Amino acid sequence: MRLMPGKTWSQQQLAVKLRVTPPAHEGLFTLERRRLLIHAAKTALAAALCWWLALRFGLHDGYWGAISAIIVLQSNFGATISASRDRILGTLLGTLLGFSFSLFGVLPWNYILAVLVAVIVCGLLGLRSSSRLAGVTITIVMLVQKTGPRWGLALDRVSEVFIGIVVAIAISTFVFPDRARLRLRDGLAQEFLVLSAFFEDIIEGFRGAPAANLAALRRDALDMLRSNNQLLEAARNEPAGGPGWREGLGMLAQFGRSLFDALVALEFSVKDSHEDGYAQQLEPALGKLALDIRTGFHHVASCIHNWRFNIPPPDLSLEEDIAQLESRLSEVRPTGFQFSQAEILRAYSVQLHLKQVARLLRASRVETSCAIGESDQTASNSV
Image (cartoon, rainbow, N blue to C red; front, side, top):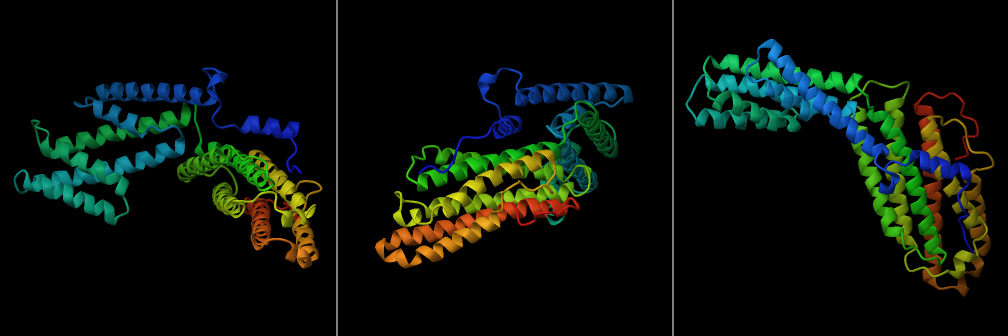
């Protein structure tokens, strides 16, 4: 008895449209490769512009502006803002400490003390990412041999870094802008499709079919979770893209992690199953819930892609499926003596995890709809 029919045409098109990393055989100008080429061009433009501006302003070490632009210019706007913040704070703190400690003491003791204080201060202020940059700036201010006062070197250093950061932010904003929140939205939609495939393979294995791709699908899902978590951190640094964007994206990311944990628990619960007879007594309720969960994953992915969550899928109510499964459990409970204890425990574990996955799916749509301010909450009992 098979659970999962083939994908519908619309689901196949959605999966293609949301694919994050296309296969290599699709040619040179795939989405990721286009992004790589655009990022390379933006980085080269930012470095050249910084060098030109340094010459125009008469800065002696203008290459530091180009270095700063290269370092802080990231693949999306949110990550660029985060890197720029870390670099400017580290540079300002390092400049202040480097100049201050150069006024007293002799090398290397004042230099060692300056670096020590910089790392401690950054740690206490929660600026650990800036501590290395502060140390580098202290090294330049205190150890680079140049004529003229130390305050001049410190001021030049800050000016060069400031130019690099301004140029990097401007390039990231106006030249082929790439918003982390938009990439995260598509990444989360793809994540739910990957979780759906992971779920399908778990259920197929429970029903006796070979599950050769299970480990690979688990790795894919975990990679998607990590990638989307990085995008979420970057998206928090970007201006809001509309009502509830930050709340909605953060909520969906949390639901994705919870669903992955629930699926891993489900995978563990079906271990060593071989077409268990007791579980077959729960049909068709068990199969109906599993099939509707699969449909629910695809529907939520579609909701994320379109950023509309107040439209429930037609003819689908996971709470009704759960009620039917519980009713079926009550009916077959008197026949339990015919089966092994392992089969019975496994069947109860599977139905508990299925109910958890179903309710997480429903909550991911309904609660995100509330978070982004959608007013129509019809059919809230559906997925």
